[in-house]
Length: 263
Length: 133
Image (cartoon, rainbow over all chains, first blue to last red):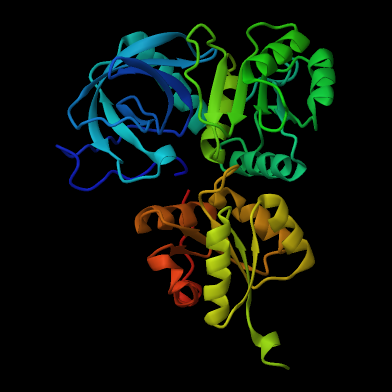
């Protein structure tokens, strides 16, 4: 699967075989490391554990206290205690990380994760248009070739699910001006924005998008090439993705964000 | 038919200029004709202008992973080109990415790409990876 490196042989203290249903998704996770707050993203999520993408060195057996969040789904953030089970220390920085097992899950969080897994692994049938209008996702990528690649990959990945079409409408504004018009005219559920080449700071971009949508809690997925800054935990509605962005975790994340409330 | 027209055309995508340069050299030495692109835009242009037999995709590209470009390349080449992933990732990971994304094979970057052409030939001769979702 896209963002899931293999464990390093011999670096795990015990065999970590988590056979619970799992999905590649991008949640925000914050944790303490050497006295510093780190923010990064996890993938390959199950109710038993997950992979945390981080270049920070950890040791097998080390305890981690994680703060998980996904706008509108795990919102407000939930703390979960976990233990490092395996490492991928021989990977390039952006693939480096740790496999962790949850020590215990609060019933409420387990229920949320179950719902998330059910929604993204096998999307629930959509309500009819009379029950609920379709969600709309705006894909704001300036580069037309990349925009087309992302659009067609999302559509292709949808074909592999129980409902072989995207569970949301996809608008593809070519620039910020078109995006502004789309946000002003239609109720957009989620914006994916490629921040590179726009000439604005991420925080400004997000504020602008939410201002145009007249919605302060509009979920925004920002794709960014530079090293990600530690994001303020007060903004629970922004997901920052470091490029390269895998299409499978992006798809799962969008499905979770755009179909929340319909499952 | 001239000797050069019999050579298989390889289009390589890699964001590192040094890798592009070395790879084109190694492939040429190994009997292939090779052209290189440094970005998805350049790749798109090359695929419009040429009809490659093989497209070699670096996995670690800045914008998207090379394996997420397999279907794009398949469309651009109308299915006529073999698509092979290129990376320094572990063999098992590369195999998994090739399988799950429908690539025709994979080649690991190693030893300064000295044996790139031989590895590519072997990858092309090997059975295609089984599609696995």
